Image (cartoon, rainbow, N blue to C red; front, side, top):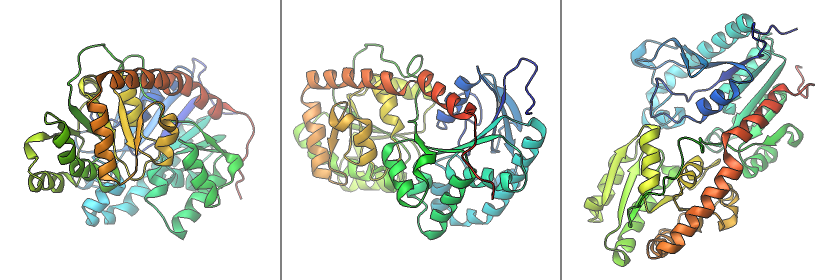
Length: 404
């Protein structure tokens, strides 16, 4: 029988490669948000990669955090600042750290499984954490129940037969795979993962305390973009659409929040289009500052070409910010086919410009869209309800996974 802490809560081990490196960090906090809400029912320990300046072990809001080392501190640059795939694209030489990263994480997982004897383990992203957890179980690392959440980039960015086989293997070694959208589930099923083991649970946001509307005034013509500055997020499309927007709305501005390898090329594109004075690059922001941006912008635009879920839409809607997004399956699903946000044709700068002009020209329509979006986000994506769904998945008795 699995040991429990003295206070009676079962232990949960969480594997992730994205987690705040310190309190107030600008790294995406959705894994941390979920862990904090699970901490009432579970004793949560998070295993995350180490990074320069981060503590090897600490407690954050009731969550124990252990960071594994995978090289000299100056070389530990695979994770964070946009994620592993983006960092490898930015600096292919980092690939030489991949074996050390996988091995160090695997050894850390095996050690924590022996030391903690958790009742359940939860890996975020099928690659690499899902593979590491599956490998640990194959090597005798005991955990009664294991689930793995696929977020999207671990499917869309890693294609080909090898990665499809790896994801199928992870699906066989875990009791459940969680997909953050119906579209992502369909993609996993199409490549051979068993549909019966996949459940759809969207990611959530703090819609009670952080991403909330304060009813304050909005800048009438500020278009906001939030996301990594990488090709798949479509920021270049937004910059190319801006001249047409300015022709109809001369006061419009574009604010880009986030970092990534495209920053310099986007700035150069703005200069070539003679709109540089209308485009601002803020870099990554802490979550409180990001929420304030959502509360003041006229609208948020997300022109992604691929997206597993679209969490920034949920955050913006929570703040009452009207949103416009690419009409791709995951975002169409999230926005109820256009009822909770304006959709435009993916990759079409002209259609994007038309959507932005229509919204900027009609304050009443923006306000109504923001109200509908807020109501939809709170009803479906608040962490309270989603944490309960994860608790049921983690605690569910019986095993659907083989260990052959």
